[in-house]
Every structure is written in structure tokens, then in C-alpha cells.
Image (cartoon, rainbow, N blue to C red):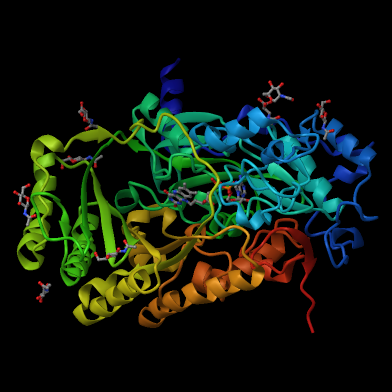
Length: 632
Ligand SMILES: Cc1cc2nc3c(=O)[nH]c(=O)nc-3n(C[C@H](O)[C@H](O)[C@H](O)COP(=O)(O)OP(=O)(O)OC[C@H]3O[C@@H](n4cnc5c(N)ncnc54)[C@H](O)[C@@H]3O)c2cc1C
Ligand SMILES: *[C@@H]1O[C@H](CO)[C@@H](O)[C@H](O)[C@H]1NC(C)=O
Ligand SMILES: *[C@@H]1O[C@H](CO)[C@@H](O)[C@H](O)[C@H]1NC(C)=O
Ligand SMILES: *[C@@H]1O[C@H](CO)[C@@H](O)[C@H](O)[C@H]1NC(C)=O
Ligand SMILES: *[C@@H]1O[C@H](CO)[C@@H](O)[C@H](O)[C@H]1NC(C)=O
Ligand SMILES: *[C@@H]1O[C@H](CO)[C@@H](O)[C@H](O)[C@H]1NC(C)=O
Ligand SMILES: *[C@@H]1O[C@H](CO)[C@@H](O)[C@H](O)[C@H]1NC(C)=O
Ligand SMILES: *[C@@H]1O[C@H](CO)[C@@H](O)[C@H](O)[C@H]1NC(C)=O
Ligand SMILES: *[C@@H]1O[C@H](CO)[C@@H](O)[C@H](O)[C@H]1NC(C)=O
């Protein structure tokens, strides 16, 4: 290269902004000509305002009704998709008498499948089952028959943008209910829906390391990540490239789907911010069927909304570009103790256990209060308080800090142990230096993914950090946590971190992420397992019972928001709780980009205009037709 060429190259390197990163699967796009023979997949234009742009039907099309596409139309769609259209059966159908019955398959599903990646690779299954309507539950000897319930009717096993575009266009043009599924981790039934067409992004697994990425004020390493990459896969990529990327703590959670669309917390949240704070560019298919790159310079309203404004609302994300950091090690310790007032106190026999219930709760309060120091060091506390029955309780926790030596970590924790021992006579021992080991954040034993369906119900509040500075308020807040566990019988799950605006940096700090995240020190959760087979009436009663404890938190901390991903789909006033002051602006952007209401999931922006009409009235269930809410 000539000297001029070299200086030109240096000049370009310094000022070049990387835009329009696309994977090869994103270069395969739907051409308007593809719809000549099949108008059902033609594009639309949000600005056109022509009669075909909106449907006035009261409900989405329903299988068996006149408005449902014919078999030959589904076949044509399948042809347009290159054969990627699936009509899967619920896996548990193998346990029910009928054509699908298979004793050995059923036994394997019941006993083994949860230790494998089976449920995560299934096009229908989700990890929270109850929104499906419990019409095909996994049991060895079920009564009755298996029906599809809230599971989608058809699934597009997407491996190209063209397929995503064809599916979005078909759903919009045929008035179908559309859902998007990635890993199926959502606790609120947002990756399923009765009578729907589902776009399954799970197999979009591409990954690319970008050593130099520059946009606006950001200049540094980045990664380009496909929509189907799971956290454990992400960690393996990080290890391969000797980098760190903010990723979900849960190893099988999608690194790019619902997690990043709402907020997304993980082990590096108090060091580098939320998942949504890492985004530098989004590739999406919008409701009109078009494929767009949305970044700080393109489509600024969507750019703001996509980071924190919720999943399945503005489009189907096909990939994102995220900030990447140098490789980092993390160091963890654990602290646990149990109270059982009926056991004779014998510390030698039972380390970490005590009989004095007052001491127990004082100790737990202290441990949570102390998390402020862990956060200040860039780390997080991850904890549970479990009611064991008969006035016994266990507190379990871990403290994880990135980039800290073992001596520094024990020095940081030592005052906590001293106070637990001396103030509250809690017999816990500071871990020895030999017991503490720094391990790489990348890789970090997340080499496999396993998960199985459950029925855990989460209720969330983001406790503001000012509570830590007011002794009286702290005492009241903690008393309300204790009441929820002791009287309510709920499991308390607390994750302490602090993704401040400063940490979010540029461009993270200006996004649709709920402002409560910027001021929180603890994501507080009440957990319960929803029993199967309860009536809608019983379910509503249970919701009201737990809501009283959450309302108490809200009363003490009126500005506490909630994390939708680990919150409750039946939360009332969810617009405020899940989106805070951003709701109206988000609603405007939703109406602008999706005037058809193609994308719908419970408690997403604009979702109040539609409701699922379930046969049994089950709150927040997905087993029913999606219809417009009638305004009086
Ligand atoms: C075992 C477990 C561990 C968890 N750990 C964590 C954790 O460490 N940190 C944390 O913050 N949360 C955690 N969560 C909660 C998690 O953030 C949510 O369940 C989240 O919704 C998962 O997103 P997903 O894309 O993997 O799942 P899905 O259920 O497939 O999707 C969730 C939502 O996102 C939408 N969506 C998915 N992909 C796309 C896409 N490409 N484009 C547009 N919309 C899309 C779906 O339609 C749905 O509305 C955990 C949940 C579980 C069950
Ligand atoms: C779609 O086409 C493929 C390939 O021809 C076929 O295997 C599949 O069963 C079809 N899907 C449906 C729902 O008919
Ligand atoms: C049951 O499923 C197994 C595994 O897929 C298969 O090998 C077997 O033939 C099936 N049995 C029957 C009776 O269909
Ligand atoms: C989905 O597509 C991928 C890639 O073509 C394929 O490997 C996988 O088996 C398909 N899954 C199902 C359930 O058909
Ligand atoms: C992480 O710790 C290991 C030892 O466990 C060490 O070899 C490695 O250099 C450390 N890496 C970083 C980035 O500090
Ligand atoms: C609860 O503890 C009391 C006193 O030790 C004991 O008599 C009773 O059996 C215990 N109940 C249960 C359910 O464990
Ligand atoms: C406590 O445990 C020690 C050691 O096992 C034992 O010697 C002692 O008798 C126990 N005391 C009581 C009160 O059970
Ligand atoms: C339990 O601990 C509290 C507070 O430390 C103390 O006031 C109380 O006397 C103790 N109760 C018993 C039975 O030891
Ligand atoms: C880790 O800590 C060292 C020493 O405090 C510091 O120099 C280094 O920049 C830190 N690394 C990261 C990635 O934060």
C-alpha cells in the first residue's frame, strides 16, 4: 500500500463507524416478488394508511373458524418458508392414551428429560407451564386427554430473516395471533398463545467477535450475537475469545431475547450495568415485515424503545451487537444459616444453625444490609429465605465479586461475620483463604444447559437504595419481608446489585429501561409454586393473598418499580410497575411501528387493547382466543 493509502486507512480506521453488521442468515431476505404468487406474505407499510393496513375483526383468527387459513394456504406458507413450518405436538402427549401414547418415551420425559437440553430444544414447551392451561401436563399416568391448550398451532423454525419476514407478513395479513419464542423461560406465558403462529428463534445461534467497533462515543471490543444464543453458549464464546460480556446468570436464559429487551441482570451487573445497557445495534424485523438495523444513528425512537421497552412489542430481534470487555475472573463465597426453635442449641453438632428466631431475623437483616458493601465493590449478593415449616427457616446466600483477590474479599466480609457472631450469636465462620478461588467468568462451568418445566410464580419489586440509609425505613421494609416469609409462607429471593446510569454509560444510560433500575440496590422477589389443577377462583384468591405483601412494599417504597421478567403477569397497574414514566412514550412508538398490533404478549406495551378470552377465566392464562377489549 502507498503511504497515501496507509494514511487513508488510518484515517478511515479512526473515523469509521461500524454499521449494518449482518450475519449470513440475515442476508437471506424476503423479496417483494416472492409474494406475487402468494399475496398472503406481501409486505405492508405502516405509513400507508390504506384500508388493508388494519383489520377491524374483533378477535384474531381461530382454528376451525371461517377466517382461519386453509390447509393449502398453510402449505403455501410452508413452501415460502422452504419447509420450515412445524405443527408439533406437545411432548407430554406420549403419556396420554391415543395415537401418540408411548410408554418408554413418557418414562424418559418424566425421569430424564429435565437433565438434558430436551425442553429447551422443543418448539412448543416453556419452562413455566400453567399459562398453557394444564391441558397436557407431564405425569406418568394422566387422567383425560391431551390437548394443545395455550401452545401455538404452528411454529416457524426460523433459520433465515426471510422466514421471519414471511411469518410476520402472513400473520399480519391473515389476522393471526403471532408469538415469538426463544428459550421459553418467560414466567408469564409470553412465549406461547392458543391459536397462534409462533416464530421460534432458538436456532439462530451465530456469534462473531468484533475486535474494533466504533459508534458514537463507544470505541472498543464488541460481539455480534444471534437471537438464539443461550447464556452458557455465550460464556463458551467468551472463553474462546478471551473476553467478558454481560450475560444472564441463569445458564439457559437467552442472551438476546426477553432478557435484554426488559433489562437483564447477571454477575457483572454492578460492574458494567444491565444487559440492555450493552446494546450497540439491533437487527429486527418490524410489524410491516421489513428488516432494519436499529442503532444510535438509525430509527432513534425504536433504538430507545428496544432497550428496556419490553419483548415481543416492536419487532422480532434477529441479532444484536453488544459491548465486550477484557476477560475477568469472579470470586464467590457463600453464607447460610438456619433457625429451628425446637432443636436444642448445639453448635458443635449443627454448625450454622440456631434456635433463637429473633437472632435469625436480625442476622438475615444484617446480611441484606451488608450487601451495600458487596455492590460498592462491583459485586452481587444472591440469596433466598426459605420457610421450612414449624417455625424453621433457612437463609442461603452467595456473594460474587469480579476482579477481586481472596484476601481482599475476606477483608471485605470479615466485619459481617464478626457482627453476626457477636451481635446476634450466629455461629458462622468466615471462609478461609484456601477455600476461596478466583474462577474465569467466561466458560465458568456453564458448559451445558439443562432445565425442566415448573410452575414457579414470581412477584417483584426493585427496592431503592435510599432504604439502606434510613434505619427506621430499613426496619419497616425488612419487617415486611419477614412477614411475607413467616406469615405468608412465601420464599423470598433477593438479588442485590446496582446498575446505575453512570455504570450504564453511553449509550446505555438513555434507554427505555425502567428508571427504578438506576436507583435500586435489591431486586426483591416473592416466590411460590402454583399448584396444578386449581380453579380460576382459587388462583385469583392466591393472587390477592400474595398481592397484599407486595402492596405493603409498594406502600413503604412508592417509587419501587418491578422487573417484568421476574414479576407476575397478573400484576395490576403493570404499566407503572414494569415501565414507570416511560410508558406513554413507549405506547406512542408502539402505535407508530405496529398499528396492526401484530406483536402481542401479556403486559407488553399496548397489550391492554387486547385480552385472552380463556374458557375457564384463569387469570393471565394463555389458553384462549385473543380479542380486542371493547371500549364503552
Ligand atoms: C431458570 C431461569 C433463570 C433465570 N435467570 C435470570 C437471570 O439470571 N437474569 C435475568 O435477568 N433473568 C433471569 N430469568 C428471567 C428471564 O430474564 C426471562 O425468563 C426472560 O423472559 C427470558 O427470555 P428468553 O428470550 O430466554 O425466553 P422466552 O420465554 O423465549 O422469551 C421471553 C419473551 O421475549 C420475547 N422474545 C424472545 N426472543 C425474542 C426476539 N428475538 N425478538 C423479540 N422478542 C423476543 C418472547 O416473545 C417473550 O415475550 C431466569 C428465568 C429462568 C426460568
Ligand atoms: C413443511 O414442509 C416440510 C418439508 O416438505 C415438511 O417436512 C413439513 O411436514 C411441512 N410442515 C407442515 C406443517 O406441513
Ligand atoms: C416409542 O418411542 C421410542 C423412542 O422414540 C421408539 O423407539 C419406539 O418404537 C416407540 N414405541 C412405540 C410403541 O411406538
Ligand atoms: C429446526 O431447524 C434446524 C436447522 O435446520 C434443525 O437442525 C432442527 O432439527 C429443526 N428443529 C425441528 C424441531 O424441526
Ligand atoms: C483468573 O484466574 C486464573 C487462576 O484461577 C489465572 O490463571 C488467570 O490469569 C486469571 N485471569 C484474569 C483475567 O485475571
Ligand atoms: C414441630 O415441632 C414440635 C416440637 O419439637 C414437634 O412436636 C412437632 O412434631 C413438629 N412438627 C412437625 C410438622 O415437624
Ligand atoms: C453437643 O455436641 C457435643 C459434641 O458432639 C456433645 O458432646 C454434647 O453432648 C452435645 N450437647 C448437647 C446438649 O446435646
Ligand atoms: C433471642 O435473642 C434475642 C436478641 O438477641 C434476645 O433478646 C432473647 O433473649 C433471646 N431469646 C432466648 C430465648 O434466648
Ligand atoms: C482489575 O483490578 C486491577 C487492580 O485493581 C485493575 O488494575 C484492573 O483494571 C481491573 N480489571 C478490570 C477488568 O476491571
